[in-house]
Length: 264
Image (cartoon, rainbow, N blue to C red; front, side, top):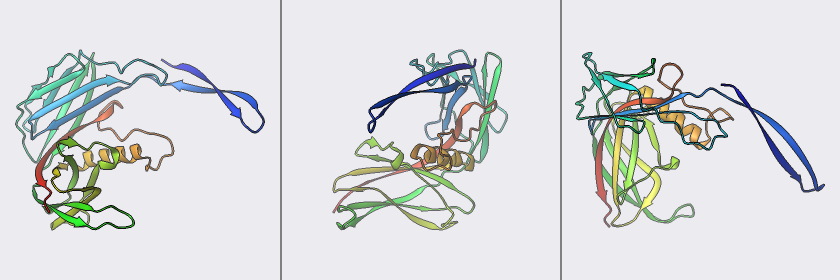
């Protein structure tokens, strides 16, 4: 399917009161498979969502894929089938993890096979959270800064911190906090989260996710693209770990959670 679309864009030239119509030719590429897959080992839940890309000019929703066969295979070669939920999603519950091992997912869509893998690394526990009061300054209001305290294991480690404030997850791009242990290899570290200041009686929960290097790189690219800080001037997709040029990522991860209530 290679359709050619044209847009007529009307430029109003304020200085001359003239109008000029410019035709832009846009190529509409073949639809691609989009696969969002994750294994949350704390919930012991494998979740997969299948869809396809659509034309940039289409008003339709992304097409759901409801006829696939989805299965996950552990390090022992045991394959388990996910249950079709009937809405483009596939689910497996009570799936007990094997840490320090690799998981593979295989998806069959009308004979087309899509495969991906990711490594389940050990979860790095949070030792504690603490809050420090910050005085008002010309650059900031007063409030409390949260510090995450954790002991980084020897070897490369990759993290993402997700916050829940007074029961509400923070999901904006500026709230995403990805970091590695480049400057704290094998040491105890205290990491401040400066994205928000807190007040007395605020309840703050931190989930410290431990990623493989592959997943960390994917989410780092995704964050750079979404925030406009990537190297490319044009929008792009982060590097997928799926075969056959499918978009998306398969992520295997665990996390530790700590909660603090701000007190004077």
